[in-house]
Image (tube, rainbow, N blue to C red; front, side, top):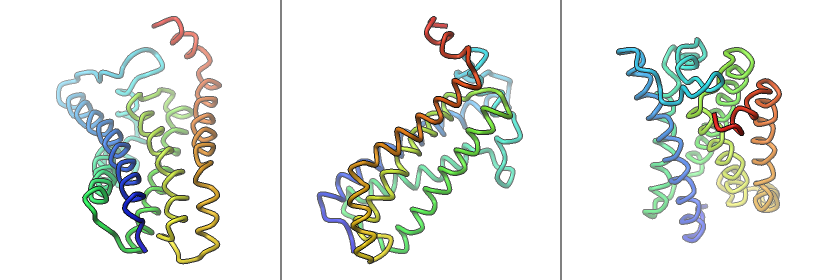
Length: 202
């Protein structure tokens, strides 16, 4: 079963926009990471004692999966998300196995980013602005995509699952708020001087 044209257009636009935003962050990280290694050029997001993409890029966590820099995986993953969104806008339909794989990939990406968030805050001790953009975009995408796929019976043909998805979808923004609110609160707790520094304009 595939979403109707109206649903496909809205959902395709959603995937394309957020996929491109995430892709842009990953592209910036990969470009600045390259120049940091090449000639020591400091990343543009080395802003203050708290925001230091350079320190995050040079951490062990930045190459946690098969030794490949994380931003390269981002280029691949969010490139796929953007392509799926563009394909839906062009009228493409995908089999249920594809959407199941897509959902697993989106959850895996979110889980990996939350792991990186935890390590950046509690282990590395620095924040990466462009990484934080992907924490936000991936959290928004995941918690809206899952109930949408459930409602459209793209994960399973179960009517019960479809009803749950239809019930959750209008309130999925609440899950997003909780997810991002938890991230913000934990950052403020770990870096209590960050908010006063930002409010002072430094």
